[in-house]
Image (cartoon, rainbow, N blue to C red):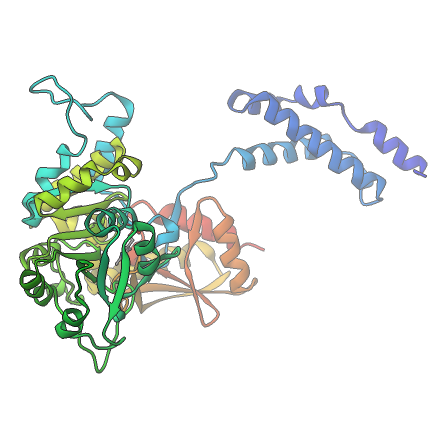
Length: 467
Ligand SMILES: *Cc1c(COP(=O)(O)O)cnc(C)c1O
């Protein structure tokens, strides 16, 4: 039984129409669908009614109801996919969308999104053209390969290449290279999907050319090398090189494929990063087919790039699977723009965000961290202890697992809330911020902060540190 007070309170609850006439709601209606606003009003009224009945509420305040409605509508109107400030220091963060596109690539995507483009028309002849032609010449020029093809991602590139080269036949691969990439991409399973059967040879830590040679039979169609991009076998090790596989392949008339994972077009060893095989080196070593990702170290859009000998690539182009994993115009546009940056070896490290973040000097990063710590200290009064320090960033994206890049960090130890609470608030905030937790402090790594991040980051921190 409801008490007299409760009955009165329930009577005081405004009707939906009445709430709709409040000026804040009228404002809300200018930018939000009426149905969404009405739904939010109903929900807020329902919740309030229940609170009154359960005895949790002892007054009805229309202004409070209206504020709740505004908050609800704003929350549900926030895009589900939204920008995140990456202060984790992980450059290729798979969960945060991997590579950032260059300005030039973003412009290219915008142009082909707003208007029509010559995706599949040859403007010289007026006849039908190929969507791959915009990037084919650039890829062959940059890698030294005879031909190129681009598909949706590198997982599909590997699937397509294995299917074209070895379906119904055997593929020989080193036991130390049966990699699993995040999200259940495993070489043995991809092999099965492609219709090829896997013959693994050697030991986990050592595989010699003679191990491959002993496994060659009438059924062998391909010698496969997989770059162990996300792990390293160290110590007493021996891997067979692509050159050695090519030499063996020539003796037995077998093609060689190399899945590089991350597609390096520039050697970053001079910048203190681990030596990784570039695509050019692998092509030069004689690999018939080379596959790599567009959005790992290349720093472009999600894509799987296949370069190699013409007759193999032609065969893949005719495979119906190619149509199923084809790229869209946004990928063509952004990949072309990304590849064009590589034509200028002097400027590419600055133009491609991934390369820029990889090669930023410790001096610059420390200075950035010092400045950020100062701004934060200035704004947050006594809500946290803030210091600029040196730390380590990671490459991420399953690339260069052993590389630890010295960086500048800002350490924030909150005084009034726990660090876990701070991390949660930052993640849910506007904008969302992702950092790292270390020894009870929040770590903001400046390496992965972009030019316009400082202001919104500081705002988000102020909001989150308040009790
Ligand atoms: C990352 C990776 C893949 C998968 O590439 P995606 O572009 O993520 O599909 C395949 N092989 C290797 C060796 C990789 O490192």
